[in-house]
Image (tube, rainbow, N blue to C red):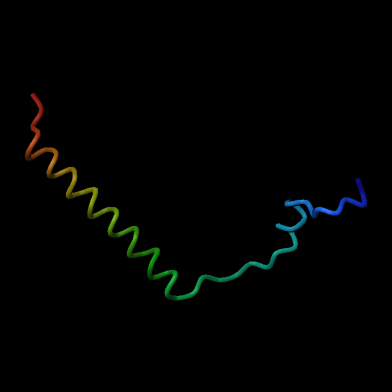
Length: 54
């Protein structure tokens, strides 16, 4: 097994360098989270407004 031609995933992950997120990536993540929260609020409002429970 020592001469395994395929590198193991664990070994590859340990050798990888950590890369910082780019500013645009951080901005996209923030906008995605904000949009998700806003849309969840709109869906909750529409649910209570148009489909009231007993």
